Length: 304
Image 1 (cartoon, rainbow, N blue to C red):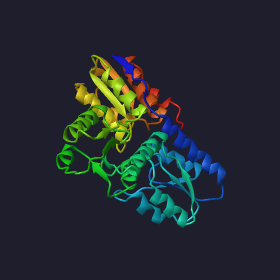
Image 2: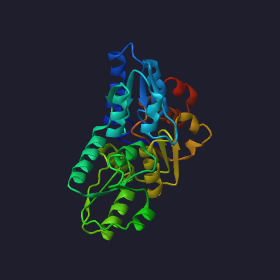
Image 3: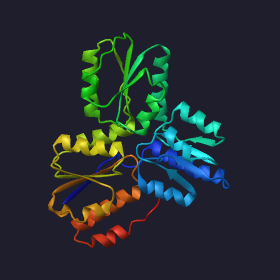
Image 4: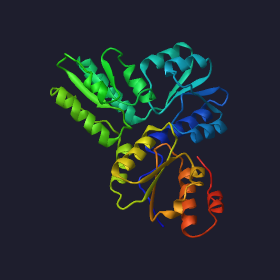
């Protein structure tokens, strides 16, 4: 069995920055209660590890960041890497909370770009994943003039009379799907200005999968809630890789006969800790070399 470790993989710069900010905030405010509004990044192992730094997370499915803020009544509130709206920031300040923003720079760039076109009286079409916090923050900029697009049905249903239309997207979408959706909008509204805002970390990870050749099995490691992880798995399937396993950790492979494949590629989402990736690599290497896979997994150092 040949094992191909796909590069790049794992933590992106935005995730590294967010985790660093959370750790530094704990040091800066040793006597304050610290709460992250929603998961800092979409990985429960990161969320759990931050508890060791006195940093708690509040998350509730179906609740917006604005609503979640009702549960934070003291101390420091950290806004996640996915971006935050001005309405939530203002509400936090009105509650007397200390605010810390861990938003990814690429997300902030997209927010600023949209605001620039809103200031020029453009209607915004924003393509994203429904209920994703990044999309939530974007749409909250202007609920009337930012129109959310989740799929081709939403594109077909559009009936916009405005001449000025600006189109952009969530930073963690599939590079293949977003191209088709942007093309469909351009065909319907030729005057629209298009800006593909998929971030470099997402793009390079997806492109690395598209460059793979003769792969029997692709293992994608990441949290089930991580959109960029889901897109990596989808890209692999769309490429025609017959066996694609999207897993949260190495234990998901224990009932899979990974040793049957000739060429196995391993990658990970941008919010996946390195040790989770290393455990999968160690497990596959041990299978290949006829060693004890459990011993190999247990030898991997756990760290954040």
